[in-house]
Image 1 (tube, rainbow, N blue to C red):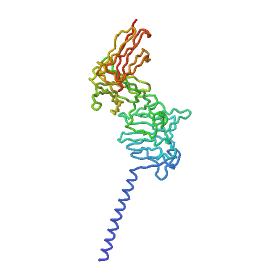
Image 2: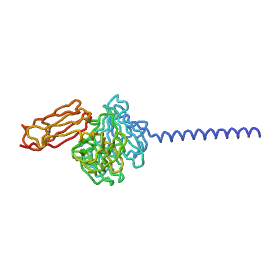
Image 3: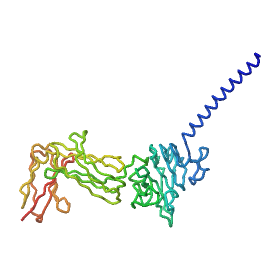
Image 4: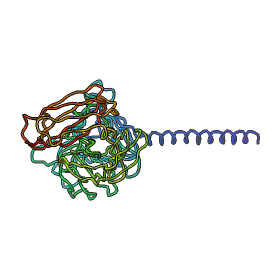
Length: 391
């Protein structure tokens, strides 16, 4: 009886150990599966399972996975591959040797059958593609007789789940059906990365890229008002611009909005007038808001409101000369420019410690007409006045 109890006890202990070890094994398997780490160790087509080695081919779609194209390896994308959650695709590892992802063009009739990477955050997260070093590259190639319409790298992060192409060739905006072309213009980053505008290391992501490229932003004090102007070169699904002003550069207030074009591949010019600038220093910036509510800020421009009271031009109309009186409350160095109607600078005078200075500019050699006198402070603030030269 004692012997049988001993055997029974040993069996129970064995079963407990078996269940514990099994649980550990299953947990380990689940952890490995959830990690979804994949490495391309040989060059070849993405769809060729043999290039991925022991890590196996990435599932499609791939959620929360890390995919690395090893140094010295070149992979050709020949499928439509969707990345979700916090998935990462690393082109290269430590940058010791050249590695690449090549996206070939097709004559496909839809997104699903094209050769593309789809960065989708519709289930949350922020999938990314990173070009690790200058030896890494992501290149789109257009073959003979193909359009590449549905090939490239796309964002899929908007409320209507449109496909916004960011690497490839036109068109750039495909509808949520994966077929309808909604806009036809170059992708934000061209057909290859890295490039001169976007050197490596460089990361493409699904929610950190606001597809509005701002070419310039300027603020000019003009007859007691501040004229703001800016130009965009590319807009994809842009919503509006909020004009923000601050007295100290830290606390900002929106003073107006300008509706954005929405979609454009050519230069678009915008303007806004602040009719009541603050006394003293005015800081301006643009809040560039996308249609889905994401936003970024422009560089900050500075205007001195006191420049209006401290800048006087006479006589006006002028005949042979014009005087520029700089008031005693102006504390900045200043450059005075006379500009014709074609934007050409005819004269320029630099003033050190400009306060209380009177500058005389000869105008007798210029034909009659309208001119601009512009004062530019050392801090970037500007004031312009119109001058009529009359005979």
